[in-house]
Each structure stands twice: as structure tokens, then as C-alpha cells.
Picture 1 (cartoon, rainbow, N blue to C red):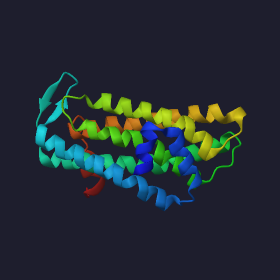
Picture 2: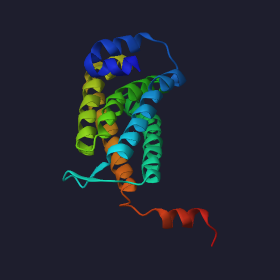
Picture 3: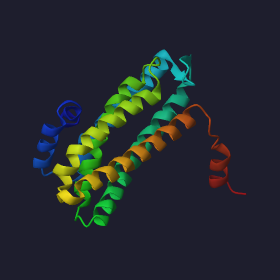
Amino acid sequence: MIRSLLILFVPLKAWEKIADQSWNVLLVFLSVAPLMVASCAFEGWAMIQFGAEKGGLGRITRLESNQIITFEIIQIGLGLFLMFFGAKFIQWSCQGFHTETTYKQAFTLTAYALSPLFWLRFLDGVPQIPSWLCWGMGALGTLVALYHGVALIIQPNTSVGFGLYLISSMTLISISGLCHFLALGLAYEKFNIRPWVGHLFLPG
């Protein structure tokens, strides 16, 4: 978690330390996962204690505890999807740029680059701060993190480095925004998935 915090304030030095470590995918995941879980837990606790902003107009509403727990479980599940699938997509993108990249490199880049989004989720528990503002600040942090991360972790040729940065940024930000939209929609019951779930799991 220390390295993920350093990415917020001194991203270049943080990535240099990360590039020097020889961690496998599991160790990188275990380094970042506690931050993701802790941010979701704090956000859920704050929503139970203080309510949640709804509708983008400063209106505070109280959600049921089971709604909040479901919301945070969905957040964690989508975060895992974003880390593992995002890393695979970045690996494919690197291959498209004729840059040999291992999944370990792609996962290391993805997991640590997403850490600003996880850190800003702590603010998301404050109902007076719009959820999309927290996501936007986290996304900006991810953009800054990727700028140095692509160069130091993927180490592409200078001719394709900026292109890889753009592809990596668009991929992670787009998938993250979609995941956030989906999680909020499910939390506030804007999407009714019960009939779909019932059709999927119940016979007849």
C-alpha cells in the first residue's frame, strides 16, 4: 500500500521502486488488494453513518444496509475485473504495437495505476462530495500514473511509447467509468436485474 500511496504524490519515484522489484502477479495483487477492500469498507461504513448523495443535486438519502453491502461487494467484484481484464487488454494492446509484454508487466502497470481510483474512493463515502467528482479525480490520478508507468514497466520503444500510453489510458478510464456507472445504478436500483437473475438461476 505504501507504493500505491507514493504514486499519488511522487509517481516517478514510486514507479522506479516498483520497476526494481521482482514481484509476481500474486504479490502485486496482494499489495494492492487491501487498499481496494479498505476503501470499499470505509465507503460503505460512511454511507451507513451519514447517508449517500443521490441525483447529483446535493440531496442526501439513506440507503438500506443490505443495499450498501451489495453495492460494495459489486464494487470489489468490478475492481477485480478491472485489474485482471484491464491487464490482459493492455497486454494485447502492447502486442498490437509489436512490444513483447508479459502478463506480469501488464498486471503490475494496471494494478498500481488504478490505485489513485481506490484512494479517492475514501472521499466517496462523504455524501457532500459527488461520487462522479471522486471518480474523476481518481481517473486524473490514473492518467498521471500511467504516464510514467508505461515507460518504466512496459519499456516500449520511444516510437510507440506515447501510443501505448494513450491506449492504456483510454482502456482503463473507459472500463473504470463503465464499472462505476454500473455499480451506482445497481446501488440505487436504477437497473432492475432481479428478473434477469431469476431467469438465469430458476427453472422454467
